[in-house]
Image (cartoon, rainbow, N blue to C red; front, side):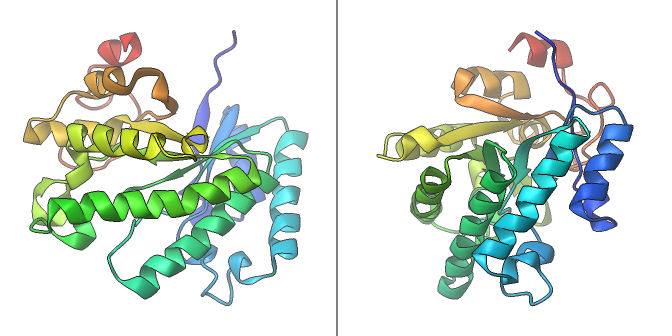
Length: 257
């Protein structure tokens, strides 16, 4: 089986549109891309965003992006949707759900099977928030989003977490037992078929500073539930998104896992 090389085009998309970003990834030698769908450019509240258009216009635009990718021989293997998580602020959380629906619709329009989204995070709730608040908000958020994944025929992937840099602590869902328990609880719902997991080695590596398992052992704990990988390296202190073998991760063990 030919193993494909995928590349996140997040940084390219700061300077170029989706098609040009995909083209640059192709020129760099990638077989597949992780296309970004988060930020102000993908928020229905921003009048300059494609998400402010009608569903028909959004679908037509992203269908053309998918067609262009296939035309030049590159796969859109995953998208990256919401990254902030619920903040326990009703208007913000409701807006996240509305944008998440558009993430699912855009992902499906491109012919892409999976959209990755982040969990509720200590970055916004703070290190002293009630653990039950984290668990309940995350459960509520994903169980409100996953029905859209079913509607559009894709899957939502929740991503492993690391630290909360400003607070200098482990993120709540950087605690792997909390991540696994919450994942299994959501997976057990009626929409579990449309829910999966993403192993971000860089995030998990940052959590090791706080006694959490290595990226390889994180992968072992959920095994085949991980259907998406974000393979990147760092020094455990910053989310550097470096190439594998350029940081502190034991890549031999990761590949064995």
